[in-house]
Amino acid sequence: MSGCKACIYMNNAATSWPKPPGVAEAMAEAVRALPGEAGRGGIRDFDVFHEVRKELALLMEVSEPEQIALGCNSTWALNQGIFGYPLRRGDRILYSRAEHNAVLRPLHRMEKQGIRTVEVPVDRAGRLEPGVWERAVREHGPKLCVFTHASNVTGAVNDAETLTAIAKEAGADVFLDISQTLGCVPVRLSRWRVDMAAFTGHKYLLGPQGTGGLYVRPGLSLEPHMVGGTGVKSDLKDMPDEMPLRLEAGTGNEPSFHGLLAALTWRRDHPMDKASLDGVVKQLAKGLMALGCRVIVPGGAVTPVVSFSIPGVSPGDAADILTGSYDIILRSGLHCAPEVMKDIGMPGGTLRLSLSRFTTEEEVEQTLRAVRDIIESGGI
Amino acid sequence: MNYRWKKTENCFAQARTYEYELPVTGAELLAYLDGWEIRENHTFRRPVFSARKDGLEIKGILAANVVKINYTAEGWEKEKEGLEEWLGSIGTEKLSE
Image (cartoon, rainbow over all chains, first blue to last red; front, side, top):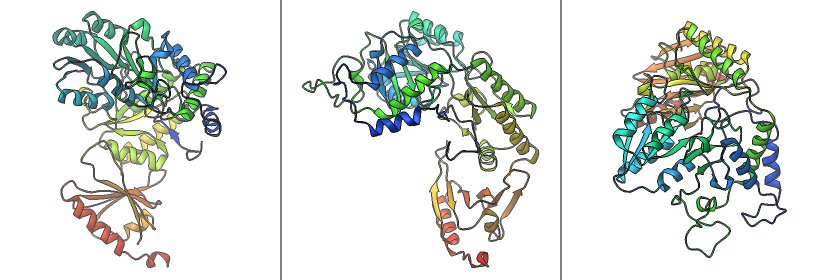
């Protein structure tokens, strides 16, 4: 844990830390080892990408590992899915106001290219309300619906099954952003009939940065957003039709996917006690409320995220003090999700503490004591 | 004094915040800030300070040698140029005595 021996790390919704045992070692070993053979390996060769796909398919509850294209992060996947989805000028895309800029910015570009985009407000907790969603779907008749499984700002988990069913009933395809949930709450893509899902390896999967990917349901063909070498079928002028090759141009990040595989294996052998983690999150939220902070408490299913503000102290100043004076690593501001701030009533942004299975009750108590110091002294 | 600087982004496009690594601590820097509105808070585990003048803000940990400077949105380039010129003109002899 170099560089942070005494720190309290509460920025897991951005990047998880620490990583499980074996992740760093797997990456180092992969760098030292002979590189893999990009789809050309023989029956006895270890294909890390294939092994990762198999683990991810189990986790996402899909039966076709080859439908998972691997790339560098969720942003890569969201770009592939949004720009590659077959749309015509005038088609509509529906999305929630709780989306990350990784969704909002591609959609903004689509709008400029003649695709109509329609935003749907979320509630004060950052959650999509099924009734509001259904009215919007009926009114606008979208071809594609994009929404996050959980708000990265508030932790509120959406009822993806119900929201997807509403969209499918109206004939829309669904693109689910599971960046904040995969590895933390159940994700059941086949059962929910999700068409595309974007994920990242460096959050609750506990893998390294630079890993992520896109699930595409069988039968849905995307136009690749990036084209290039695939190592095989090099005599074709176009990208191959079959998945995952179709979306995987260029050399993959083999060392990092070795790290992700180690993390996935460790996770499988060490299931997370979500109830216990929820208890620690509640302890934190209750403690902050008792101190007089304004805390977003979504209720229902949540990821381990607590967004709040300290009366009279800007989020930026408070974060500077918490990190500089107390070694508490957190995030302040808009969290790359500017639209949701209006709906949750915090236009200036929030302080966000995002926990992990490794966060202890003692770390929560220390954090509460630091916040109390700020409140009692009025900041800087 | 010699210093190094780096832009530190936040969530807002109009952010004009820079970090400066100085050869002196925040507490030592305060000695040079004549005419600034200075606040110190010693209740935190590592005490902090802020200094404000004409919309400009310097803040940091009193015992650390990295400070954060927020420039105002309008005319910030000139502000930055002026402040850096002033920083460069400060001698550190007094501190080494």
